[in-house]
Length: 168
Image 1: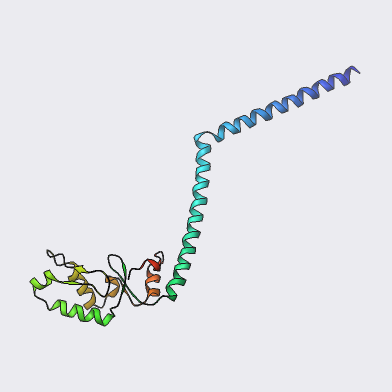
Image 2 (image 1 turned 45 degrees about the vertical axis):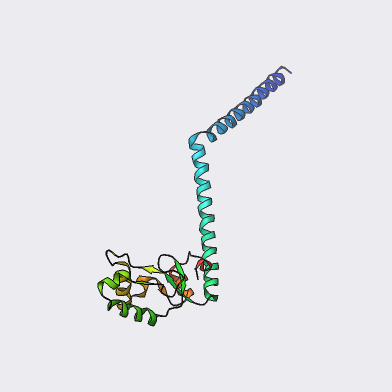
């Protein structure tokens, strides 16, 4: 009988000891999670999840933009903004040829809307802006001026831009 009582006491002590150790471990875990390292791990996981969600959202947006662009008609000028243009490549070539024949004083006063709702002016001092545009057109480098013969071609070059934002 005495042995059974001694064994019950040992079992009780061991069980209480395990309970106390478990409680201490839980307290230490709680303190660890509130430290900078614990918060850093949580923050890193949150950043990874957010980044992943943003990437999938960007991909979904690009797919939606591609579908919109495939249905849209028109030519686009991606020059200091995105504008629909009524000009064809031939119109740009005619303008560039005419611009190149202008005198220096006429070039300083030159301006064009390139078939858009915006007017582009020469800066008057260096003659770089319109002169560079004319040079690119003469060199048949329409990508340098941002001319696209279709909205779909524009979207292929700029997949993250919503084609609905192209101004008329």
